[in-house]
Image 1: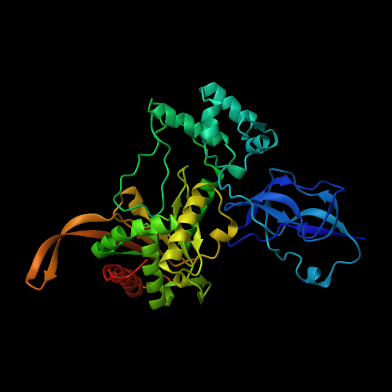
Image 2 (image 1 turned 180 degrees about the vertical axis):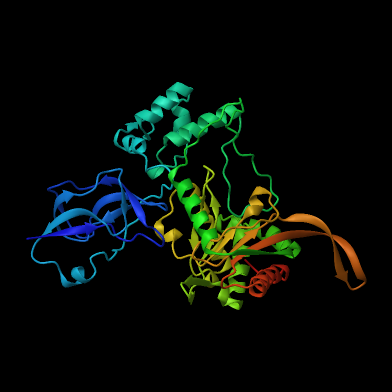
Length: 435
């Protein structure tokens, strides 16, 4: 018999620590290799961690609710015989991790863990914790209203945050705020909930786990990379007309909404192929040119936080495939059902600030990437155009694009030429192409 340490394996790029949510095994239980041993929460997703060994659990070294660094031991497991050579050489090698439902903001607190262990079932088969039911009762929320909620917790569970959001929306007589990636630029966007009452008293608001991670990442990014932003205005009149003629066709054929986002992603991927030094990362004094073009798209969540799912091998997907992928990732992001794989290995990022009515911005890089493009709102403008009869003034659809880049490795010429190439692809959009 040999007692070995089970360490917390690597769970994705830049993930340095995890919070222990639940142990699925207790001391004395048998466990097989690749069988779930515990559930943890990272800044990206919640996930089950499989055992690296077959044996008996001898000791649990950390408690539920504790934060553990990647690579640190979490349990002792007694195995038969000696430790295999491969395990000795790579004690912290990460296994393929089966991902559970992503809950980016609501499972780390002990109060939430208490909810998970004390669920009550409604007549329609949905489960509610005592805390959720107590809040609902105190605020006059009926069971029918709870049943109608799309919960953001695991397996669609309604959490305390969902109930609080419902209560606030009822009090403000407003709908809950959701942002759909790729909505037509300039479209009417509901106002976010205004929950603060300015009565002269200050309010202290504790950051949730995701907001803390976002704050740390943004601060680290501006400390790491000298940011420069170039701006280009594109005439997307033909693109707007083409989408208007094709969106009904795609909806009828596949039930898919054709937004602007996949069209933009296609143009960006083409521009990256033209300028591959935008698709790089910095490692000390080395520049790593990435072999795949994996574009991340920033998605605003109902709680106001952002998450960036990644479309892997973007340049190898057709426009139809991009549309399906964008719609699927945006839908699962808003329902907290992304996996770690959905968030991993991005090489470039796009942020759709036009969905908020913004025309331009200066986005911050997602490290270790060296470029990020903000897409502004599409607006109608009077513009001078060239015609066979001479110059004329016409109403055109215009959009600003804001390209921020890491000035350590991307100079102004490359950063500017890249975003201009994206604009060129959009302005020369083929009106005769099929979806």
